[in-house]
Picture (spheres, rainbow, N blue to C red):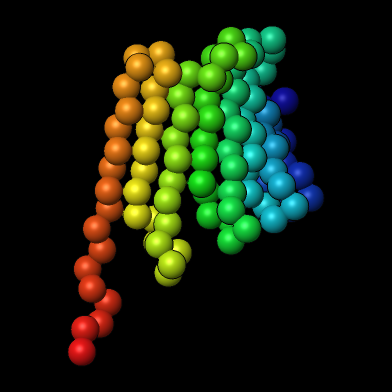
Length: 101
């Protein structure tokens, strides 16, 4: 089977991965087929905003990505912690002023 969808028309598997979703339709896990121990877990806020991605290789956490949002729901910061290379990268996003009076 090359591709498979569920009743909500979401991709549940392809030739390389299985995909899992929460009740809100958010993608929560991407798992490699076979016994590789390679997978990604995705975590969402109560507002359905992606807040964390954890990447595992051979069942060991190798990378963690955290997202931060402002009060308007705009993504403001991204922090990538690479456990394999022992590095941390912080990206700060800037948005133009919406309206100033």
